Amino acid sequence: MTPRELLGEGTLLRTDPAGDVPDTGTYGLFLDDTRHLSHWELTVDGTRPRLLAGDGDELVLTPWTRRGADPSCTVFRRQTVRYGRLTERVRIVNHGAAPAELSLAYRFAADFADQFELRTDRDYPRPPGVRGTERTDDGVRLTHRRADFHRATTLRVVSAPPADLHDADVSWTLAVPPHGDVTVTVEVCAATAVPPPAPTIVVEPTGEVALDEAVARGSADLSALLVPDGTGGHTVAAGSPWFLTLFGRDSLITSLFALAAAPWLAAGTLRALAATQGRTVDPSRVEEPGKILHERRRGELSHFGHVPYGRYYGTVDATPLFLVLLAETGDDALAAELEAPARAAVTWMFDHGGLDRLGWLVYRTDGTGLVHQCWKDSARGICFRSGEPAGGRLAVAEVQAYAYAALRGTAGIARRVWGDHAYGDRLDRTATDLRARFVRDFWLDRDDFVALALTEDGRQVDALASNAGHVLWTGLLDDDRATRVGRRLAGPDFFSGWGIRTVAAGQPAYHPVSYHTGGVWPHDTAIAVAGLARHGLHAEAETIARGLLAAAAHHRYRLPEVFAGFGRDEHPVPVPYPHSCSIQAWAAAAPLLLRRTLRPGHPKDPTPTA
Image (cartoon, rainbow, N blue to C red; front, side, top):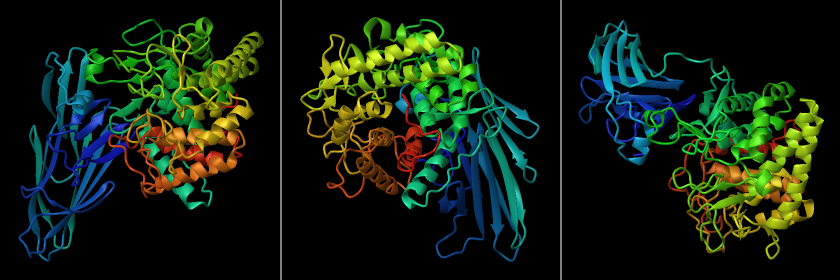
């Protein structure tokens, strides 16, 4: 059974279709990687009511009756979720001419499980915590404590007739008048403080139905993924259900896509990442001074180091993307505020990142955290066209493109905002040199394409991959080579009719139902579309964008994280990838980038201006 999900400001409720949380599986109320509600069951006269209809947060139920008998009442159940809080309102309507008396009850429990345990179905040996139950003036507080880690869930009766309250259930005896109703409202609170709500993402319609529907759906989904940044603003979580936290790469790219519609999101993301920027060398977290965070986790397993993701820095691309986003905001006050973090990020690229020593921004495949530290981070995500995975120290193509855009953008900030012309000139010289060397070392002459990566000994990782679209997006290639690459991306081995395959079909490495070697990622396709348009390939960009919008229409305009690479001529609908994340931030934001590409002219066009 597919869980029903309600999402708001980083808080997730996963229920069965009737709105209950079964006491098995991965259902529950989640905040900051912790399950705050592991059982939540509504009963009427001792039994669970029957679901009649449900749409979003509104459910219609009725008590069970014998066959042929009309129900005496209807139960309208409304559940809403915002940061750290589930609010549930139950309205019981009596359809009869006589008063009705019935009992309404909730059974509840909180196991405070870490989401890593639930999603991996794995036990992590650790000392037990201390569980407690406390009565409050208007409810029950369930607590969990282990050393300095503590979490609590509070059940509050907000408005209702007098309740009979116990440690694991609350009940009412309700007298419902003829043709009348009675309402009960309760709250389940996983956080003590509620931050101000995020601004609404509103985008002016273009009059084109498919584009407007995809943008509207994506904007609403992005709003659900907004999380407080800790400074009064908001950033965006990577995706539901298991990535409702700050992710460097995902949050930065999403903020770039949404820059025209939500410039405040870029500011919140940049501030949140500056606050968690690497300060020291810690191999267990892949942390280095100036490096931008990959992933921030707050659950018990992360807190005590059972998993390495409390503050995990295993990404090579978040640092240049941080600088790209800062430059693209065009916000001089923000650039002045973040001068120290920006300079530290540049220093990391030159020092630990490898630009000074090796000439490229590199990472080494990791056996403890993520194997690869670029966006294709699965074990076979970076491979040769034979399918052989690449390992060791790697310089990946799109990472060099991000570095190029970061250097150019920061050079402009240095001269315009920081008044440091010498620093700006140094960054520009490095960018010019990187551009020349990229063509020399990454260009695949026989394919008129760019290599996916370079190995430690300078060998080209020769799989033809969608990463080349990111290279076009940043302007790293001259127009002639970019045109050749762009036309190949628009060809039938890359373009499935729905989007750009991560690896071109026809290579041994290609697998249509693969995460990174054949599947189609909407954000990746949107970047390629923007790259094609940047280099004047407008017809090709339009065709691919229309394919992606057609795919969105098959998903009620909600683009998934990834779908299979089967061609549109093979299957009349996009074939789902079995483990795709939805809602997912950069997939939700992809229509915003398509809108900017198909309807250019906004001053904050999210295509790097390097």
